[in-house]
Length: 391
Image (cartoon, rainbow, N blue to C red; front, side, top):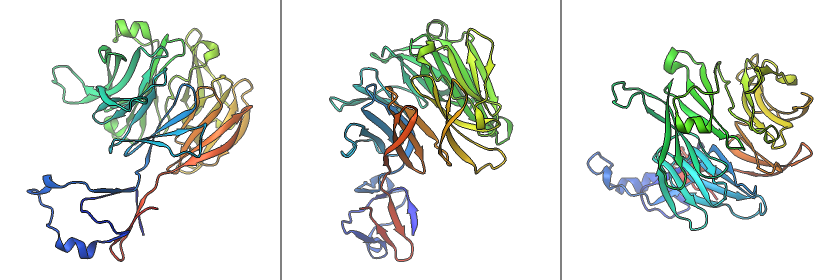
């Protein structure tokens, strides 16, 4: 059996098993002349999760992005069927508005606002990268690949960042970087709405014919960005290393957003805006290639996913550290979670691996697995020409 993530059928066939060898002989071949007349009549399989995730502000709902739309699960009624927002297209990023009523969704045609009460959907702004609402809900920051110059004299794309009025969609400020063929992979406001952090990523072979990954972290004060987007960021760092980079702003609410965690030189690096750069190494993570970091809302507990370069591409591990002592609390799994995220209240953790999301409940910095979610697929039988539909 050949495994497929999904299957779209362009002929009307209602049997549980569809034998193409018999039915296709009676159909007109698809040609450039008649291709525009194709109509989708069925879709089998639910696609795949893309890794996009957003918790609702009250931590009761969790939105997952997929290749066909958005799935919204309830943490208070885990046995209930999830709500599915069907876009029939890939979802790149998600952000929940602070009032919990709107879900911002990045797709290839721009950023959609989906009203969770009226179920209405509208495209509000352009953008193709990470997105984030400001804590007061007034601003929306959006990453996008944009032309290197306004007059299009340079036919190349660079990473850009736009800030919009979240209520009107009016663009307030925009910054064009020098990061060629790059896009924003994480955008974050500090809890006090003073700082804005952006992580950009670009494959090294686009600029240097290597397989390295170039990642950049820029941190701005929101006020300065809105007044002068081209002003020098208060913190700008470049990391060049295969499979590692900056996780952006992981805001510590206790410290009013003045601490930043990144993955530099294989170690977790702590930056303070008012002090000299400090570096801390957390236990077994030394010399790792770190792929993902998430900070618990209490600011004392960190989840890190990385791999030992000596065993690359194997050797993925996800561990938890006490930031006060630097000691390892526990090993979550001997495998990689490419996306992890704490709920706003700190009571839940979601992790993405092997095409599935896993949900844990958090108690005193320990985790208890509560649920997991995966999407149904279609199986294609090569031997007898039959399509096996999912249950």
